[in-house]
Image (cartoon, rainbow, N blue to C red; front, side):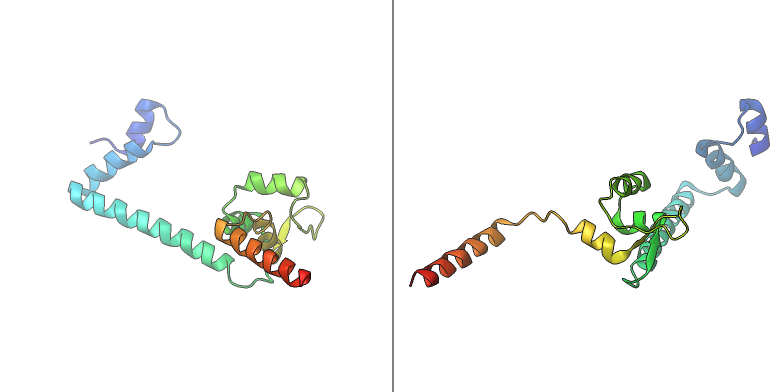
Amino acid sequence: MQNIEELNTEAKLEEPTVQDLSAVMKSRLLLSSEQYSNIINQLTELKELFRQNATASVQNNPDDFLNLSQASVYTGFSKSFIYKITAANDVTFYKPNGKTIVFKRVDLDNFLCRRKIQSNLEISLQAEQSLISHRLKSV
């Protein structure tokens, strides 16, 4: 079976594709399809755990400052969207050295909680409270 260097030479690629690496890995390790699937599943689980750990580490202290990457993980927005809202001054941010953008978690929370859309139940309760208040003023 071919190794990675041979695949690169024949295909004239700078880097092997995932399929190439997969084929080499299967041939070199002599894994059954089930074992290979188990390894892929474990890697997928590790990737998810890493993502969850990164998210959890960003959510520790509300007074902490978050850099752009951390703000992106915390809000779930892309970095380009974060740049757009900072350019439009839609969210409070800081530039301690005149270049690097940082955010306070509370400022990001305030941005995320703006423009609340009330549920039908909240609207009904508000209407009832308004009617009761109006009736009390009339009496």
